[in-house]
Length: 417
Image (tube, rainbow, N blue to C red; front, side, top):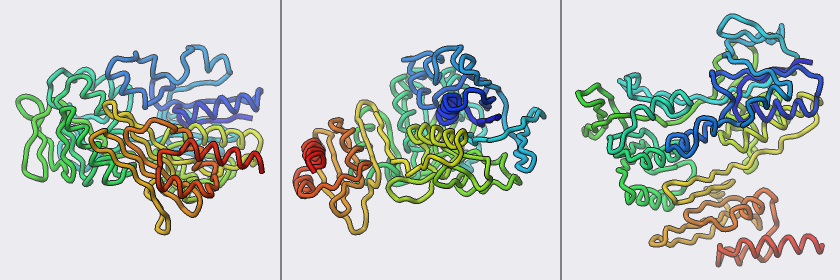
């Protein structure tokens, strides 16, 4: 049996290790699309602030890790999949035959349709190669423009400001982290970032980027022009599926999969940022581009590749934990709430603390917070365990900080029952 895994991110690495554990005699090829050891993109900001070296981004620290497991790591990019012949064509002209194929090709940053986006000094912050180029240009007190204020952008901004950049953030939406925070929490985060010295322009877009004597000139929709030594684009990502054109593999936002992470082609599976998998809260199928989901997908898909259709994926919980210049923010599950639901809210603006709980019936279905680091695991457990709160729902509506008490009380009640 030959398994080929396209993509050497968290999903691909977890899949290969699972495959080896379940199928000791199989041929396993891990196709890395970059000339790097398998690494975590989420570690790049720590590289930029020099908390770690490049090896600190690697998903496995031993240089011999994959070889010792008999996993053949090859560097190349998928160009085309011939599903009829079970053959993968690479950009260098070579071909690989497979018995089962896992698409874990991840996502790539979107390039906004802005004139000048291709100029030197305008970069995404997505790969180790990008990180090297940014580090080369990044100087203390240099003006930097960051396009975007979503999750990835907020990770990057901390690295930029820690390195002493004079940062301006331009976000087309009316608030920061619009897919993670409600207007109350987002407004608090904006004030926090501005208090730390950045300028945050929400509700604005970049119209053009031009070469200037001292670097770059960033022209906004307001008519203002910003000087920049460096412009970083972090306006979103899209799943890497171009190589699947003409293959017969069904693609929507990503590769469409079933409850076993199998595509519409019998021996092809998908995992991670490229897979349109089931969401725990909504039960809809959607791309959920977070690392815990990628790892979970990789393990489940690999199990089903090795054993056949055996392990169901019941949905990944959407969760985000973010440290923005020392202020921790989180969101879990259906954090925006449901039309017929109830919510509890706790706000302490001067103390930079906010907590919002969302309920449906007697269940906690979502939560978001700023400055609350206590009992984060409890929040996840209550939501993902679909814990029936009983009388504790009303207590949490009155005082949302009593999460641990609710967890212990309901756990004891279930044990006794």
